[in-house]
Length: 482
Image (cartoon, rainbow, N blue to C red; front, side):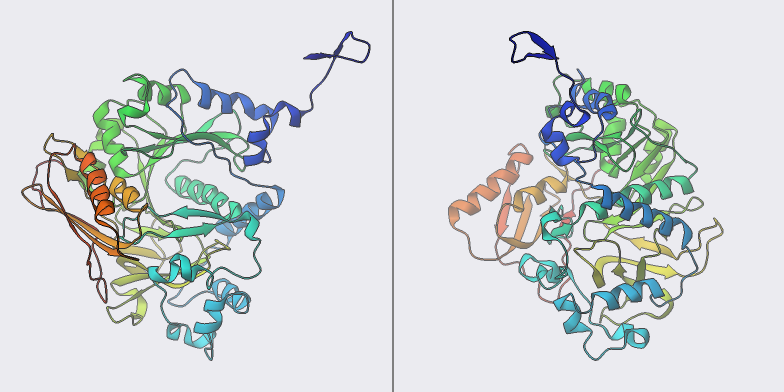
């Protein structure tokens, strides 16, 4: 490129690598390199690309990469057998945070955690509500690097979880570890697209980007809903053209991918968010002839466990910085991981160091090594978030996540949505404060639109959550499909 110099004659100007890269890209992906541009542009500007609605980046800096590299070494090298008590690493992290977290100061008072860990009061989702987060976020963290990520509300409680770029970046080595345990060991760089995340929702954020920790490998999040694409077959063409190493997403997205004619066969599938039902597992494996790795993860905790290569109904704890236990209905520790509610301690999120956090999921913990070769404990009989789908009379399937997203915009603490056998629906809410009749009407109207206004929705503003476990989504319609 040239410009007119002081003599009025064209002079050659050589841009530096930093100048060659758009300022917006560098703001969101500070480590972006010039050689990553072809993959970045290919994903974003393809003739088959969806109607992108968001631009994101990993925000990683050099120091973050060093943190993730240390975590990856720790992940791979420190996999000693665990017992039914937090290991030294987890206990050390708790002690280091004791003076930096108001919540820790309160619950650890007069407790010797080396001996009396199970005397520490349990933490629940209500402890992570906005007004309480200040008590859990450490005082010594750099708040300028904090991001807030809302949960989808699948538990009925909408939570805005703080996180850091380095912690989010640690998803990459945990995912790669799980894929490696299932036989896929891959080297990534800017010449490949690592993954495309599939969704099937009424609306969701969609974007394409590259991952700094994977040396510029591409990544995209797409919505298979026809409304997100210019032409009917573009989603299939986009995935084929991008040729990702693996496809990620929830089971419902995989089900829809098989139904709408996606024919790309990745090297492997990575499923997360909700339980992989047998019907969907059989459909997807038959259609694509590929392995499915099931990932147990929560927004609050990050990755927790991955499915065993020998038994997909068993889940191995993915990292040594996690301690899992189970508790009974009274919140009492169950010795040796007997069946009960799963309680989480540890992780690598510096903004949310969870201590005895009740997950609202159930299972049992086997602390013995597995015959597959994994030495960390195994979650058995995992009873996590089940796939629930609602039906309109058209008939269309409605993803509960779309209902969660609507309620997220209103002063809702918790909710329950039930579809009766006659297709009518009852929506019960626990509100922060009362809402006007016009707001009630707006909520009902927005949800009714999901069902093509084909059925009745009854609203109750007095959901009783005190001392109860609320099941947020229930469908009583009996059909032969999923």
